[in-house]
Length: 285
Length: 320
Image (cartoon, rainbow over all chains, first blue to last red):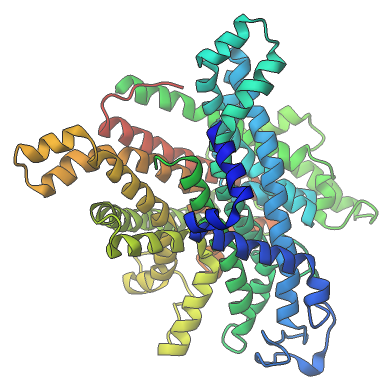
Protein backbone atom coordinates (compact mmCIF):
# COMPACT_ATOMS: atom_id res chain seq x y z
CA UNK A 1 0.00 0.00 0.00
CA UNK A 2 2.29 2.76 -1.19
CA UNK A 3 -0.33 5.42 -0.62
CA UNK A 4 -0.20 4.77 3.11
CA UNK A 5 3.50 5.56 2.99
CA UNK A 6 2.76 8.69 1.01
CA UNK A 7 0.01 9.59 3.45
CA UNK A 8 2.40 9.30 6.37
CA UNK A 9 4.85 11.57 4.54
CA UNK A 10 2.11 14.13 4.13
CA UNK A 11 1.39 13.91 7.83
CA UNK A 12 5.05 14.31 8.81
CA UNK A 13 5.92 16.99 6.26
CA UNK A 14 2.82 19.13 5.86
CA UNK A 15 4.76 22.05 4.35
CA UNK A 16 6.08 19.94 1.50
CA UNK A 17 2.66 18.38 0.93
CA UNK A 18 1.09 21.82 0.82
CA UNK A 19 3.54 22.83 -1.91
CA UNK A 20 2.76 19.72 -3.90
CA UNK A 21 -1.03 20.00 -3.57
CA UNK A 22 -1.53 23.74 -3.01
CA UNK A 23 -5.22 23.89 -3.94
CA UNK A 24 -6.15 20.86 -1.85
CA UNK A 25 -4.13 22.18 1.09
CA UNK A 26 -5.82 25.58 0.91
CA UNK A 27 -9.26 23.96 0.72
CA UNK A 28 -8.43 21.67 3.63
CA UNK A 29 -7.30 24.67 5.70
CA UNK A 30 -10.54 26.48 4.88
CA UNK A 31 -12.59 23.41 5.79
CA UNK A 32 -10.76 23.04 9.11
CA UNK A 33 -11.37 26.73 9.78
CA UNK A 34 -15.08 26.25 9.11
CA UNK A 35 -15.06 23.22 11.39
CA UNK A 36 -13.45 25.23 14.17
CA UNK A 37 -15.91 28.07 13.63
CA UNK A 38 -18.75 25.57 13.96
CA UNK A 39 -17.34 23.99 17.11
CA UNK A 40 -16.66 27.33 18.77
CA UNK A 41 -19.81 29.01 17.45
CA UNK A 42 -20.89 29.80 20.99
CA UNK A 43 -17.68 31.75 21.66
CA UNK A 44 -17.48 33.37 18.22
CA UNK A 45 -21.07 34.38 17.60
CA UNK A 46 -21.69 37.99 18.61
CA UNK A 47 -25.41 37.32 19.25
CA UNK A 48 -27.67 34.49 20.30
CA UNK A 49 -28.79 32.91 17.00
CA UNK A 50 -32.29 32.25 18.35
CA UNK A 51 -33.18 35.34 20.37
CA UNK A 52 -35.73 37.65 18.77
CA UNK A 53 -35.20 41.40 18.70
CA UNK A 54 -38.09 42.83 16.73
CA UNK A 55 -36.82 46.40 17.12
CA UNK A 56 -33.81 45.47 14.98
CA UNK A 57 -35.58 43.38 12.34
CA UNK A 58 -34.37 43.31 8.72
CA UNK A 59 -31.33 45.50 9.24
CA UNK A 60 -28.89 45.64 6.32
CA UNK A 61 -25.34 44.39 6.96
CA UNK A 62 -23.39 46.79 9.19
CA UNK A 63 -20.44 46.75 11.55
CA UNK A 64 -22.65 45.51 14.36
CA UNK A 65 -24.57 42.93 12.31
CA UNK A 66 -22.01 41.79 9.72
CA UNK A 67 -24.56 39.85 7.68
CA UNK A 68 -27.60 41.92 8.72
CA UNK A 69 -30.63 40.67 10.64
CA UNK A 70 -33.70 38.66 9.65
CA UNK A 71 -37.38 39.48 10.12
CA UNK A 72 -37.26 38.51 13.80
CA UNK A 73 -34.16 40.63 14.34
CA UNK A 74 -31.94 37.58 14.69
CA UNK A 75 -28.29 38.15 13.77
CA UNK A 76 -27.63 36.43 10.40
CA UNK A 77 -23.88 36.13 11.01
CA UNK A 78 -24.45 34.22 14.23
CA UNK A 79 -27.05 32.03 12.53
CA UNK A 80 -24.67 31.26 9.65
CA UNK A 81 -22.00 30.27 12.20
CA UNK A 82 -24.38 27.92 14.01
CA UNK A 83 -25.70 26.67 10.67
CA UNK A 84 -22.23 25.32 9.89
CA UNK A 85 -22.79 22.82 12.70
CA UNK A 86 -25.75 21.18 10.99
CA UNK A 87 -24.14 21.10 7.55
CA UNK A 88 -20.82 19.74 8.76
CA UNK A 89 -22.35 17.27 11.19
CA UNK A 90 -24.77 15.89 8.60
CA UNK A 91 -22.00 15.74 5.99
CA UNK A 92 -19.39 14.05 8.18
CA UNK A 93 -21.62 11.63 10.08
CA UNK A 94 -23.57 10.41 7.07
CA UNK A 95 -20.41 9.93 5.02
CA UNK A 96 -18.67 8.03 7.84
CA UNK A 97 -21.62 5.81 8.67
CA UNK A 98 -22.61 5.38 5.03
CA UNK A 99 -19.08 4.43 4.02
CA UNK A 100 -18.76 1.84 6.78
CA UNK A 101 -22.16 0.27 6.08
CA UNK A 102 -21.79 0.45 2.30
CA UNK A 103 -18.30 -1.03 2.28
CA UNK A 104 -19.41 -3.84 4.58
CA UNK A 105 -22.37 -4.71 2.37
CA UNK A 106 -20.27 -4.46 -0.80
CA UNK A 107 -17.50 -6.71 0.48
CA UNK A 108 -19.94 -9.25 1.94
CA UNK A 109 -21.75 -9.31 -1.40
CA UNK A 110 -18.54 -9.78 -3.37
CA UNK A 111 -17.18 -12.37 -0.98
CA UNK A 112 -20.40 -14.34 -0.57
CA UNK A 113 -21.01 -14.53 -4.35
CA UNK A 114 -23.73 -16.81 -5.70
CA UNK A 115 -27.37 -16.31 -4.74
CA UNK A 116 -26.64 -13.96 -1.82
CA UNK A 117 -24.66 -11.67 -4.12
CA UNK A 118 -27.40 -11.78 -6.74
CA UNK A 119 -30.13 -10.89 -4.25
CA UNK A 120 -28.10 -8.08 -2.67
CA UNK A 121 -27.24 -6.66 -6.09
CA UNK A 122 -30.86 -6.62 -7.27
CA UNK A 123 -31.77 -4.72 -4.09
CA UNK A 124 -28.95 -2.29 -4.70
CA UNK A 125 -30.15 -1.82 -8.30
CA UNK A 126 -33.55 -0.87 -6.96
CA UNK A 127 -32.17 1.45 -4.26
CA UNK A 128 -29.84 3.15 -6.73
CA UNK A 129 -32.86 3.98 -8.86
CA UNK A 130 -33.96 6.48 -6.18
CA UNK A 131 -32.78 10.05 -6.59
CA UNK A 132 -30.87 10.77 -3.34
CA UNK A 133 -33.14 13.66 -2.47
CA UNK A 134 -36.24 11.51 -2.89
CA UNK A 135 -34.99 8.69 -0.66
CA UNK A 136 -33.87 11.15 2.01
CA UNK A 137 -37.16 13.03 1.78
CA UNK A 138 -39.28 9.88 2.20
CA UNK A 139 -37.32 8.69 5.22
CA UNK A 140 -37.17 12.08 6.90
CA UNK A 141 -40.90 12.57 6.59
CA UNK A 142 -41.76 9.12 7.90
CA UNK A 143 -39.26 9.39 10.77
CA UNK A 144 -40.46 12.95 11.61
CA UNK A 145 -38.04 15.79 10.73
CA UNK A 146 -35.06 16.06 13.10
CA UNK A 147 -31.28 16.23 12.65
CA UNK A 148 -31.01 12.49 13.34
CA UNK A 149 -33.63 11.52 10.76
CA UNK A 150 -31.96 13.79 8.22
CA UNK A 151 -28.70 11.94 8.82
CA UNK A 152 -30.45 8.56 8.57
CA UNK A 153 -32.23 9.57 5.38
CA UNK A 154 -29.09 10.84 3.68
CA UNK A 155 -27.02 7.87 4.83
CA UNK A 156 -29.51 5.38 3.43
CA UNK A 157 -29.61 7.35 0.17
CA UNK A 158 -25.85 7.05 -0.32
CA UNK A 159 -25.18 3.51 0.97
CA UNK A 160 -26.07 1.64 -2.25
CA UNK A 161 -23.53 3.53 -4.34
CA UNK A 162 -20.78 2.91 -1.79
CA UNK A 163 -21.72 -0.76 -1.71
CA UNK A 164 -21.57 -0.97 -5.51
CA UNK A 165 -18.13 0.64 -5.65
CA UNK A 166 -16.74 -1.48 -2.80
CA UNK A 167 -18.13 -4.66 -4.35
CA UNK A 168 -16.61 -3.96 -7.76
CA UNK A 169 -13.20 -3.40 -6.22
CA UNK A 170 -13.50 -6.36 -3.85
CA UNK A 171 -14.36 -8.63 -6.78
CA UNK A 172 -11.17 -7.73 -8.57
CA UNK A 173 -9.11 -7.97 -5.38
CA UNK A 174 -10.61 -11.38 -4.70
CA UNK A 175 -9.11 -12.64 -7.95
CA UNK A 176 -5.60 -11.42 -7.06
CA UNK A 177 -2.95 -14.03 -6.51
CA UNK A 178 -2.13 -12.85 -2.97
CA UNK A 179 -5.70 -13.60 -1.92
CA UNK A 180 -5.46 -17.04 -3.50
CA UNK A 181 -2.17 -17.56 -1.69
CA UNK A 182 -3.72 -16.58 1.63
CA UNK A 183 -6.59 -18.97 0.96
CA UNK A 184 -4.34 -21.85 0.06
CA UNK A 185 -2.33 -21.26 3.23
CA UNK A 186 -5.58 -21.90 5.12
CA UNK A 187 -6.46 -18.31 6.10
CA UNK A 188 -9.95 -17.99 7.58
CA UNK A 189 -12.47 -15.88 5.66
CA UNK A 190 -12.39 -13.21 8.39
CA UNK A 191 -8.63 -13.00 8.15
CA UNK A 192 -8.64 -12.88 4.35
CA UNK A 193 -11.30 -10.18 4.23
CA UNK A 194 -9.87 -8.14 7.09
CA UNK A 195 -6.24 -8.46 6.14
CA UNK A 196 -6.30 -8.47 2.34
CA UNK A 197 -9.64 -7.73 0.72
CA UNK A 198 -10.73 -4.76 2.84
CA UNK A 199 -7.51 -2.72 2.82
CA UNK A 200 -7.12 -3.21 -0.92
CA UNK A 201 -10.74 -2.41 -1.73
CA UNK A 202 -10.98 0.82 0.20
CA UNK A 203 -9.16 3.20 -2.17
CA UNK A 204 -12.01 3.84 -4.63
CA UNK A 205 -14.39 4.27 -1.71
CA UNK A 206 -12.11 6.92 -0.22
CA UNK A 207 -11.85 8.64 -3.62
CA UNK A 208 -15.62 8.86 -3.80
CA UNK A 209 -16.11 9.81 -0.14
CA UNK A 210 -15.66 13.54 -0.76
CA UNK A 211 -18.23 13.32 -3.54
CA UNK A 212 -20.65 11.75 -1.07
CA UNK A 213 -19.95 14.50 1.42
CA UNK A 214 -20.75 17.15 -1.20
CA UNK A 215 -23.94 15.29 -1.98
CA UNK A 216 -24.86 14.91 1.69
CA UNK A 217 -24.34 18.60 2.48
CA UNK A 218 -26.33 19.66 -0.60
CA UNK A 219 -29.10 17.16 0.13
CA UNK A 220 -29.48 18.42 3.70
CA UNK A 221 -29.63 22.00 2.44
CA UNK A 222 -32.18 21.06 -0.24
CA UNK A 223 -34.35 19.20 2.29
CA UNK A 224 -34.30 22.15 4.67
CA UNK A 225 -34.94 24.50 1.76
CA UNK A 226 -38.05 22.49 0.93
CA UNK A 227 -39.11 22.83 4.56
CA UNK A 228 -38.65 19.11 5.20
CA UNK A 229 -35.24 19.01 6.86
CA UNK A 230 -34.00 20.17 10.23
CA UNK A 231 -37.01 21.73 11.97
CA UNK A 232 -36.95 25.30 13.31
CA UNK A 233 -35.65 27.07 15.29
CA UNK A 234 -32.14 25.54 14.92
CA UNK A 235 -30.45 27.42 12.09
CA UNK A 236 -29.70 25.43 8.94
CA UNK A 237 -28.38 27.15 5.82
CA UNK A 238 -31.00 25.52 3.65
CA UNK A 239 -33.87 26.74 5.81
CA UNK A 240 -32.32 30.20 6.10
CA UNK A 241 -32.35 30.32 2.28
CA UNK A 242 -36.00 29.28 2.30
CA UNK A 243 -36.99 31.86 4.90
CA UNK A 244 -34.90 34.56 3.25
CA UNK A 245 -36.22 33.97 -0.24
CA UNK A 246 -39.90 33.78 0.66
CA UNK A 247 -40.96 37.40 0.30
CA UNK A 248 -37.64 38.94 1.31
CA UNK A 249 -35.53 38.16 -1.77
CA UNK A 250 -35.58 41.75 -2.99
CA UNK A 251 -36.23 43.56 0.28
CA UNK A 252 -33.49 41.84 2.26
CA UNK A 253 -31.18 39.97 -0.14
CA UNK A 254 -28.59 39.44 2.63
CA UNK A 255 -30.89 36.82 4.11
CA UNK A 256 -30.38 34.76 0.94
CA UNK A 257 -26.86 35.68 -0.07
CA UNK A 258 -24.89 34.92 3.11
CA UNK A 259 -26.19 31.46 3.96
CA UNK A 260 -26.00 30.59 0.25
CA UNK A 261 -22.39 31.74 0.06
CA UNK A 262 -21.50 29.77 3.19
CA UNK A 263 -23.01 26.66 1.64
CA UNK A 264 -21.23 27.24 -1.66
CA UNK A 265 -17.86 27.77 0.03
CA UNK A 266 -18.26 24.57 2.05
CA UNK A 267 -19.19 22.46 -0.99
CA UNK A 268 -16.42 24.10 -3.01
CA UNK A 269 -13.83 23.21 -0.36
CA UNK A 270 -15.00 19.61 -0.22
CA UNK A 271 -14.91 19.39 -4.03
CA UNK A 272 -11.37 20.79 -4.19
CA UNK A 273 -10.21 18.43 -1.44
CA UNK A 274 -11.78 15.64 -3.45
CA UNK A 275 -9.72 16.66 -6.48
CA UNK A 276 -6.58 16.62 -4.36
CA UNK A 277 -7.42 13.21 -2.90
CA UNK A 278 -8.05 11.85 -6.40
CA UNK A 279 -4.73 13.19 -7.70
CA UNK A 280 -3.02 11.66 -4.73
CA UNK A 281 -4.62 8.22 -4.69
CA UNK A 282 -5.22 7.76 -8.40
CA UNK A 283 -2.51 9.59 -10.33
CA UNK A 284 -3.62 8.05 -13.63
CA UNK A 285 -6.70 10.24 -14.00
CA UNK B 1 -26.33 -6.37 -28.89
CA UNK B 2 -29.99 -7.39 -29.02
CA UNK B 3 -29.34 -9.96 -26.33
CA UNK B 4 -27.72 -7.29 -24.17
CA UNK B 5 -30.65 -4.91 -24.61
CA UNK B 6 -33.08 -7.76 -23.96
CA UNK B 7 -31.39 -8.63 -20.69
CA UNK B 8 -31.42 -4.98 -19.64
CA UNK B 9 -35.13 -4.83 -20.40
CA UNK B 10 -35.71 -8.03 -18.44
CA UNK B 11 -34.13 -6.41 -15.37
CA UNK B 12 -36.25 -3.27 -15.70
CA UNK B 13 -39.53 -4.62 -14.32
CA UNK B 14 -38.12 -6.53 -11.31
CA UNK B 15 -36.03 -3.50 -10.31
CA UNK B 16 -39.07 -1.24 -10.51
CA UNK B 17 -41.10 -3.74 -8.48
CA UNK B 18 -38.45 -4.01 -5.76
CA UNK B 19 -38.21 -0.21 -5.61
CA UNK B 20 -41.98 0.13 -5.28
CA UNK B 21 -41.94 -2.42 -2.45
CA UNK B 22 -39.20 -0.39 -0.74
CA UNK B 23 -41.35 2.74 -1.02
CA UNK B 24 -44.36 0.86 0.29
CA UNK B 25 -42.30 -0.48 3.18
CA UNK B 26 -40.98 2.96 4.06
CA UNK B 27 -44.49 4.41 4.06
CA UNK B 28 -46.27 1.56 5.85
CA UNK B 29 -43.92 -0.57 7.89
CA UNK B 30 -41.75 2.02 9.61
CA UNK B 31 -42.79 3.02 13.13
CA UNK B 32 -45.77 5.32 13.53
CA UNK B 33 -49.39 4.73 12.67
CA UNK B 34 -50.19 5.90 9.15
CA UNK B 35 -53.58 7.11 10.32
CA UNK B 36 -51.99 9.41 12.88
CA UNK B 37 -49.55 10.69 10.31
CA UNK B 38 -52.28 11.27 7.74
CA UNK B 39 -54.53 13.03 10.23
CA UNK B 40 -51.62 14.91 11.76
CA UNK B 41 -50.35 14.91 15.32
CA UNK B 42 -48.96 12.07 17.39
CA UNK B 43 -50.79 9.08 18.87
CA UNK B 44 -51.67 10.90 22.08
CA UNK B 45 -54.33 13.06 20.49
CA UNK B 46 -57.59 11.25 19.89
CA UNK B 47 -58.87 11.70 16.35
CA UNK B 48 -62.42 11.79 15.16
CA UNK B 49 -63.30 8.09 14.90
CA UNK B 50 -65.21 8.61 11.66
CA UNK B 51 -62.17 10.16 10.02
CA UNK B 52 -59.93 7.40 11.37
CA UNK B 53 -62.31 4.86 9.91
CA UNK B 54 -62.33 6.58 6.53
CA UNK B 55 -58.53 6.66 6.34
CA UNK B 56 -58.28 3.02 7.42
CA UNK B 57 -60.77 1.96 4.84
CA UNK B 58 -59.30 4.00 2.03
CA UNK B 59 -55.78 2.73 2.68
CA UNK B 60 -57.13 -0.76 3.24
CA UNK B 61 -55.23 -0.87 6.52
CA UNK B 62 -57.33 -3.70 7.94
CA UNK B 63 -56.10 -5.98 5.18
CA UNK B 64 -52.75 -7.77 5.34
CA UNK B 65 -49.77 -5.77 4.01
CA UNK B 66 -49.37 -8.01 0.99
CA UNK B 67 -52.99 -7.44 -0.01
CA UNK B 68 -52.55 -3.69 0.46
CA UNK B 69 -49.50 -3.67 -1.76
CA UNK B 70 -51.23 -5.91 -4.27
CA UNK B 71 -54.23 -3.65 -4.61
CA UNK B 72 -51.98 -0.63 -5.10
CA UNK B 73 -50.02 -2.49 -7.77
CA UNK B 74 -53.22 -3.60 -9.48
CA UNK B 75 -54.57 -0.08 -9.56
CA UNK B 76 -51.32 1.16 -11.14
CA UNK B 77 -51.40 -1.63 -13.70
CA UNK B 78 -54.98 -0.78 -14.65
CA UNK B 79 -54.15 2.91 -15.16
CA UNK B 80 -55.70 4.06 -11.91
CA UNK B 81 -52.30 5.01 -10.41
CA UNK B 82 -53.25 4.27 -6.83
CA UNK B 83 -56.72 5.79 -6.55
CA UNK B 84 -57.40 9.32 -5.42
CA UNK B 85 -55.57 12.05 -3.57
CA UNK B 86 -56.41 12.20 0.13
CA UNK B 87 -56.38 15.95 0.16
CA UNK B 88 -58.58 17.03 -2.71
CA UNK B 89 -60.01 13.73 -3.97
CA UNK B 90 -58.53 14.23 -7.46
CA UNK B 91 -57.85 10.95 -9.27
CA UNK B 92 -54.09 10.41 -9.20
CA UNK B 93 -54.17 9.44 -12.88
CA UNK B 94 -55.28 12.94 -13.84
CA UNK B 95 -52.62 14.48 -11.55
CA UNK B 96 -49.99 12.37 -13.27
CA UNK B 97 -51.29 13.28 -16.72
CA UNK B 98 -51.06 16.96 -15.81
CA UNK B 99 -47.76 17.01 -13.93
CA UNK B 100 -45.55 14.33 -15.45
CA UNK B 101 -45.10 16.10 -18.85
CA UNK B 102 -43.74 19.20 -17.08
CA UNK B 103 -41.00 17.27 -15.30
CA UNK B 104 -40.17 15.22 -18.38
CA UNK B 105 -39.79 18.38 -20.48
CA UNK B 106 -37.62 20.00 -17.82
CA UNK B 107 -35.37 16.92 -17.65
CA UNK B 108 -35.14 16.43 -21.41
CA UNK B 109 -34.29 20.09 -22.12
CA UNK B 110 -31.69 19.98 -19.38
CA UNK B 111 -30.02 16.82 -20.65
CA UNK B 112 -29.92 18.05 -24.26
CA UNK B 113 -28.52 21.45 -23.30
CA UNK B 114 -25.98 19.88 -20.94
CA UNK B 115 -24.76 17.46 -23.61
CA UNK B 116 -24.56 20.26 -26.18
CA UNK B 117 -22.35 22.25 -23.79
CA UNK B 118 -20.35 19.53 -22.10
CA UNK B 119 -19.07 17.60 -25.10
CA UNK B 120 -17.48 20.48 -27.05
CA UNK B 121 -16.24 22.14 -23.86
CA UNK B 122 -14.75 18.88 -22.59
CA UNK B 123 -13.02 18.28 -25.93
CA UNK B 124 -11.64 21.83 -25.87
CA UNK B 125 -10.28 21.26 -22.37
CA UNK B 126 -8.53 18.06 -23.45
CA UNK B 127 -7.11 19.47 -26.67
CA UNK B 128 -5.78 22.54 -24.88
CA UNK B 129 -4.72 20.68 -21.76
CA UNK B 130 -2.82 22.86 -19.30
CA UNK B 131 -3.52 26.13 -21.10
CA UNK B 132 -5.85 28.92 -20.09
CA UNK B 133 -8.79 27.47 -22.03
CA UNK B 134 -8.40 24.26 -20.05
CA UNK B 135 -8.29 26.27 -16.83
CA UNK B 136 -11.60 27.94 -17.76
CA UNK B 137 -13.08 24.54 -18.53
CA UNK B 138 -12.08 23.27 -15.10
CA UNK B 139 -13.52 26.35 -13.40
CA UNK B 140 -16.77 25.80 -15.31
CA UNK B 141 -16.84 22.17 -14.21
CA UNK B 142 -16.05 22.67 -10.53
CA UNK B 143 -18.40 25.65 -10.33
CA UNK B 144 -21.30 23.66 -11.69
CA UNK B 145 -20.53 20.93 -9.23
CA UNK B 146 -20.23 23.14 -6.14
CA UNK B 147 -22.71 26.00 -6.52
CA UNK B 148 -26.04 24.74 -5.15
CA UNK B 149 -28.69 25.00 -7.85
CA UNK B 150 -31.31 26.57 -5.58
CA UNK B 151 -28.90 29.28 -4.43
CA UNK B 152 -28.01 29.99 -8.05
CA UNK B 153 -31.69 30.16 -8.94
CA UNK B 154 -32.39 32.68 -6.18
CA UNK B 155 -29.38 34.77 -7.20
CA UNK B 156 -30.50 34.73 -10.83
CA UNK B 157 -34.02 35.82 -9.89
CA UNK B 158 -32.63 38.55 -7.67
CA UNK B 159 -30.19 39.79 -10.32
CA UNK B 160 -32.84 39.85 -13.05
CA UNK B 161 -35.25 41.82 -10.92
CA UNK B 162 -32.63 44.32 -9.77
CA UNK B 163 -30.90 44.75 -13.12
CA UNK B 164 -33.63 44.65 -15.73
CA UNK B 165 -36.75 44.49 -13.60
CA UNK B 166 -37.82 41.20 -15.15
CA UNK B 167 -39.09 38.09 -13.45
CA UNK B 168 -40.30 34.89 -15.05
CA UNK B 169 -44.04 34.32 -15.58
CA UNK B 170 -45.93 32.90 -12.64
CA UNK B 171 -48.26 30.68 -14.62
CA UNK B 172 -46.97 27.65 -16.44
CA UNK B 173 -47.88 27.12 -20.10
CA UNK B 174 -47.03 24.09 -22.15
CA UNK B 175 -44.94 24.76 -25.23
CA UNK B 176 -47.97 24.05 -27.43
CA UNK B 177 -50.11 26.53 -25.49
CA UNK B 178 -47.93 29.62 -25.32
CA UNK B 179 -44.40 28.97 -26.58
CA UNK B 180 -43.06 32.38 -25.57
CA UNK B 181 -44.16 32.17 -21.97
CA UNK B 182 -43.11 28.52 -21.85
CA UNK B 183 -39.56 29.47 -22.82
CA UNK B 184 -39.53 32.46 -20.47
CA UNK B 185 -40.42 30.26 -17.53
CA UNK B 186 -38.28 27.25 -18.43
CA UNK B 187 -35.09 28.99 -19.47
CA UNK B 188 -33.73 29.73 -15.98
CA UNK B 189 -34.36 26.33 -14.38
CA UNK B 190 -33.05 24.54 -17.47
CA UNK B 191 -29.87 26.60 -17.70
CA UNK B 192 -29.19 26.24 -13.97
CA UNK B 193 -29.82 22.51 -13.88
CA UNK B 194 -27.83 22.06 -17.09
CA UNK B 195 -24.76 23.73 -15.60
CA UNK B 196 -24.76 21.28 -12.72
CA UNK B 197 -25.36 18.28 -14.96
CA UNK B 198 -22.88 19.46 -17.60
CA UNK B 199 -20.19 19.86 -14.93
CA UNK B 200 -19.83 16.11 -14.51
CA UNK B 201 -20.19 15.38 -18.22
CA UNK B 202 -17.51 17.97 -19.02
CA UNK B 203 -15.08 16.45 -16.55
CA UNK B 204 -15.62 12.97 -17.92
CA UNK B 205 -15.39 14.11 -21.55
CA UNK B 206 -12.13 15.90 -20.81
CA UNK B 207 -10.66 12.96 -18.87
CA UNK B 208 -11.90 10.44 -21.45
CA UNK B 209 -10.49 12.44 -24.36
CA UNK B 210 -7.13 12.84 -22.62
CA UNK B 211 -7.05 9.10 -22.05
CA UNK B 212 -7.95 8.22 -25.63
CA UNK B 213 -5.79 10.87 -27.32
CA UNK B 214 -2.69 9.26 -25.86
CA UNK B 215 -3.39 5.91 -27.49
CA UNK B 216 -1.73 4.33 -30.49
CA UNK B 217 -4.72 4.23 -32.81
CA UNK B 218 -5.01 8.01 -32.59
CA UNK B 219 -1.39 8.37 -33.66
CA UNK B 220 -2.12 5.97 -36.52
CA UNK B 221 -5.17 7.97 -37.56
CA UNK B 222 -3.16 11.18 -37.52
CA UNK B 223 -0.19 9.70 -39.35
CA UNK B 224 -2.35 8.46 -42.17
CA UNK B 225 -3.23 12.10 -42.74
CA UNK B 226 -6.81 12.32 -41.44
CA UNK B 227 -8.12 15.77 -40.71
CA UNK B 228 -7.78 16.58 -37.00
CA UNK B 229 -11.54 17.13 -36.75
CA UNK B 230 -12.21 13.60 -37.98
CA UNK B 231 -9.59 12.16 -35.65
CA UNK B 232 -11.17 13.97 -32.71
CA UNK B 233 -14.79 13.29 -33.46
CA UNK B 234 -14.85 9.93 -35.17
CA UNK B 235 -11.93 8.19 -33.53
CA UNK B 236 -11.38 9.79 -30.16
CA UNK B 237 -14.80 11.05 -29.10
CA UNK B 238 -16.61 7.81 -29.80
CA UNK B 239 -14.32 6.02 -27.36
CA UNK B 240 -14.19 8.85 -24.87
CA UNK B 241 -17.97 9.04 -24.63
CA UNK B 242 -18.34 5.64 -22.95
CA UNK B 243 -17.37 6.82 -19.45
CA UNK B 244 -19.33 10.02 -20.10
CA UNK B 245 -22.46 7.96 -20.62
CA UNK B 246 -22.03 6.09 -17.36
CA UNK B 247 -21.68 9.38 -15.48
CA UNK B 248 -24.73 10.70 -17.34
CA UNK B 249 -26.69 7.76 -15.96
CA UNK B 250 -25.44 8.16 -12.39
CA UNK B 251 -26.11 11.90 -12.37
CA UNK B 252 -29.73 11.61 -13.47
CA UNK B 253 -30.61 11.19 -9.80
CA UNK B 254 -28.98 14.51 -8.95
CA UNK B 255 -30.73 16.07 -11.94
CA UNK B 256 -34.15 14.87 -10.77
CA UNK B 257 -33.40 16.01 -7.21
CA UNK B 258 -32.50 19.41 -8.65
CA UNK B 259 -35.71 19.37 -10.68
CA UNK B 260 -37.73 18.91 -7.47
CA UNK B 261 -36.15 22.05 -6.02
CA UNK B 262 -36.38 24.06 -9.27
CA UNK B 263 -40.06 23.22 -9.67
CA UNK B 264 -40.67 24.51 -6.16
CA UNK B 265 -38.77 27.76 -6.74
CA UNK B 266 -40.19 28.54 -10.16
CA UNK B 267 -43.68 27.24 -9.48
CA UNK B 268 -43.53 24.62 -12.22
CA UNK B 269 -46.44 22.21 -11.78
CA UNK B 270 -44.38 19.03 -12.21
CA UNK B 271 -44.20 15.82 -10.23
CA UNK B 272 -41.27 17.17 -8.20
CA UNK B 273 -43.37 19.92 -6.71
CA UNK B 274 -46.24 17.46 -6.64
CA UNK B 275 -44.36 15.05 -4.38
CA UNK B 276 -43.14 17.82 -2.08
CA UNK B 277 -46.70 19.07 -1.66
CA UNK B 278 -47.99 15.51 -1.19
CA UNK B 279 -45.31 14.78 1.40
CA UNK B 280 -46.11 17.97 3.30
CA UNK B 281 -49.82 17.10 3.22
CA UNK B 282 -49.19 13.45 4.15
CA UNK B 283 -51.03 12.50 0.98
CA UNK B 284 -49.77 8.90 1.09
CA UNK B 285 -51.41 7.51 -2.07
CA UNK B 286 -49.90 10.33 -4.12
CA UNK B 287 -46.49 9.95 -2.44
CA UNK B 288 -46.41 6.21 -3.16
CA UNK B 289 -47.29 6.66 -6.85
CA UNK B 290 -45.07 9.68 -7.44
CA UNK B 291 -42.04 8.16 -5.75
CA UNK B 292 -42.49 5.12 -7.99
CA UNK B 293 -42.74 7.43 -11.00
CA UNK B 294 -39.39 8.99 -10.11
CA UNK B 295 -37.81 5.56 -9.97
CA UNK B 296 -39.47 4.74 -13.28
CA UNK B 297 -37.92 7.84 -14.90
CA UNK B 298 -34.48 7.00 -13.49
CA UNK B 299 -34.69 3.44 -14.79
CA UNK B 300 -35.95 4.55 -18.20
CA UNK B 301 -33.15 7.08 -18.67
CA UNK B 302 -30.61 4.49 -17.60
CA UNK B 303 -32.10 1.96 -19.99
CA UNK B 304 -31.74 4.43 -22.86
CA UNK B 305 -28.16 5.08 -21.77
CA UNK B 306 -27.42 1.37 -21.69
CA UNK B 307 -28.72 1.03 -25.23
CA UNK B 308 -26.54 3.96 -26.32
CA UNK B 309 -23.59 2.18 -24.73
CA UNK B 310 -24.20 -0.84 -26.90
CA UNK B 311 -24.52 1.37 -29.98
CA UNK B 312 -21.30 3.24 -29.21
CA UNK B 313 -19.28 0.21 -28.31
CA UNK B 314 -20.22 -2.99 -30.14
CA UNK B 315 -17.82 -4.94 -27.92
CA UNK B 316 -20.06 -4.50 -24.88
CA UNK B 317 -21.98 -7.60 -23.95
CA UNK B 318 -24.09 -8.17 -20.92
CA UNK B 319 -22.13 -8.77 -17.78
CA UNK B 320 -23.05 -8.16 -14.22
